[in-house]
Length: 143
Image (cartoon, rainbow, N blue to C red; front, top):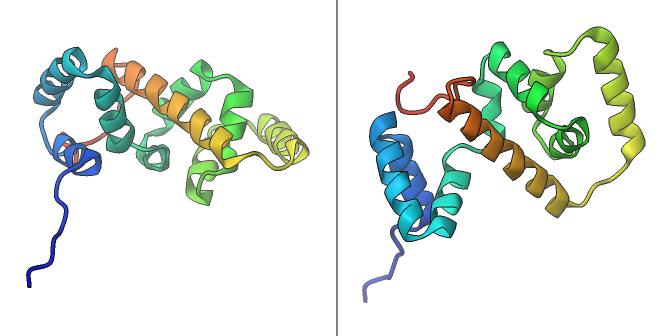
């Protein structure tokens, strides 16, 4: 009576890709994009999540904030852990932080689907900025 268990899947592929060197990762992901762009995006979405932004340095957070619409950032941060929210707020001036928090509170509840969508869009932008060297996301090349 053996129990069946599942192996593999998108999460496992993302974990493997997170452990590869950057040039190997790029090569594999480029090849996968040619074969199945949807699968490649799903794996990328699992490789580096919005919660991982807490490990991005201040310069990277500031680059990301300059490239993201404030409303989109506000929605994404509504569902973010306190550490991630603090990471972004710490990179704002005191005045901007106050205004951002007031606007965020005034916005009220946001649907989870909207939060997840905003977070995915920001992470896709972060990966593009990482590819151009404007932002360092971390991963296998960092300890």
